[in-house]
Image 1 (tube, one colour):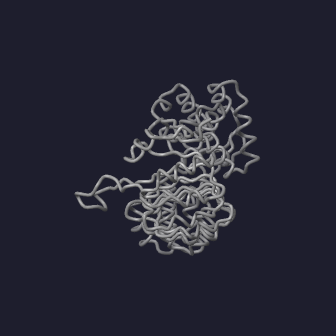
Image 2 (cartoon, one colour; image 1 turned 60 degrees about the vertical axis):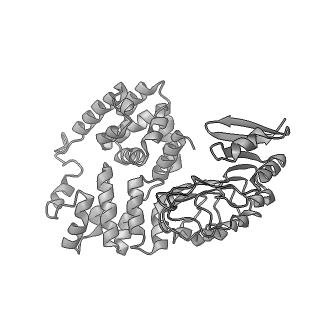
Image 3 (spheres, one colour; image 1 turned 120 degrees about the horizontal axis):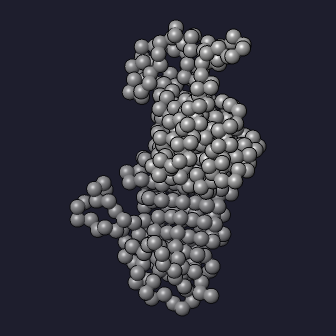
Length: 422
């Protein structure tokens, strides 16, 4: 998925696809990026749209934002986001934050906020929106502003109404994280209802850390359905120690997860609509069984990365997987030739070790590849499977040097791509 597509999908998850597409089409109709900034700055105020635009940029990483801002429409969307919170511009890559377009957006945001500032509306005698709310808030204790303050604040206010932490337009990223921490600490049904207002198609790493912290404080299935449902088309869970409850997310078709401990994959057996799955087992975790995913009927793309030496990978032999990226970790890969739909394979047949974490000081730098690896690779290529190997693995250079004439090899950026010779 391109950076533009990622932000478009995020906006659609907040506003709805039809409304998001209409907005982006309007912003994309300008002839160039500066004109999109000027045109967006002239739009009538719409707090809901501006808040949605802000959430899109706050939740995206810097690389995605930089890629998306090749687009005319995304500069217009950034202009609307800055109305909700001009600080969003501070998170831009340095070369974009210092650009003339960013300066124009800052000026436009300042002008917009001044025109919408609190006070009587001209000719009406009415107070500006938010004035009554601010006055009512004077009777309540000030909310915590830092993560480090939350535990003490909740202890001092045990009967706090969770609704005080409700998501609102213009809310900054730091305030969102404070709210997530607080609602997780309250951990009541009302807190989960309020927490669901923060549900998003995508979360920042910092927000994911808060969600994983809170997940176990609630019923895990209720929490997963509330907080991860909007991202079911492509859910990035980040680093976590448990995925219990993930089966409650309806329509989950793609999942990316990093396992920090020996997490159980059994909950994935319930995710029968999965088509794409990426599991990264870090050092200190490792996969012990992948049987729960071997029965997924629609799984087409699978990545099993990291420590796999304790898992029986051969259970994948009769799966419908077409694209596979796997760390065999020294295991026999002959089962790969029995996968009926396999079209593309990227594989690490050996596995680099990290002596600082798991091996003695005199350990080798690499776990050797299985003796039959070369034979397996040749059989796969000759059957029409495109195979990508890692050139740095010690067995690969001599293997490539002795390739038979019916196999061709292309090398680039440390990878070797093997296919049947034309």
